[in-house]
Image (cartoon, rainbow, N blue to C red):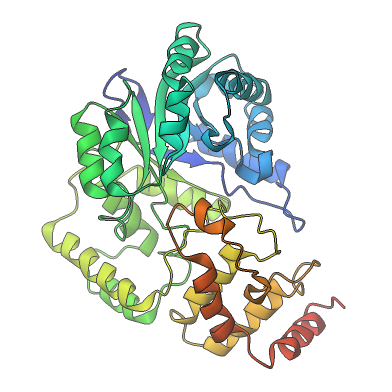
Length: 399
């Protein structure tokens, strides 16, 4: 495992951090606690020392899970990062209430890296007026938090203002080779680093979209490289190639993924990709932009939908439609997974959307979700949807 220093405090942090937003789950959606605990501890045993969670992850179950997973001496081996749910704050007292509840959930007396969560739109202005600076100062002084930071999903033009608004120790931004000019982007990353902030990266694989289903046209470009690497290695090494980056978070929930990420994190030095390799990544980026329909990262912030639409899953299959060789098979899987055939449940189709618009306000990617869902209906559903659902139920033996 390679390590990089936090600029302001000198902490040696593993370049690979364990993200707890997409923990391995059971069929009913609850965390598979036994397996996830083994995964977290395995990563720690192999050098990972930065673990990231938040109040809303897994519908509130992520923090209590992590508190239990870090028993038996594991808490002392890591730095915990969690986040103040800024959108739920209505008073100065709320800030202490949430932090104290998080300390209890995590079974710890301090948070090593505490972030003000998802600063987008007017959220910072609102909580600034409520006294968030005073809260952070006092929580740091009394030892409940050690380092203060913020996570950002807003427009690029707002990022520098957030950096300059408080004496932050670090920030967390979305960054990957498709997001150089999206949200904070490269310019924001460099500005934060120039101010002495550590930079934590989320969504390095765009919610897995850069690795789960790799279209043939993209594979052909990767195959041109003299040094052969899997797409996940290209994506992670591209981020780690930037010396401004301190930690890259990965939502690891498969043992094979953990092994692979650990291997890459042993070798990913800054400025280690050649100019030719960087140009290859640029060509892959261009090809993806030609193929992808919607920039969803499956972060789940839009969920739950009041009408019952599984928005991230709808978008996953919609994107896959243009990335796979067999679009009819993708339409079948859309019917199976969203029609309740694979796992018993109510339908979650895009056509259930009632155009309420609540999801638009919550989306970090600023996607016009109801509009895109209309396109999903047109491309993925059609008159034979119920027939595909029936076939899927028969195949999966669920009636």
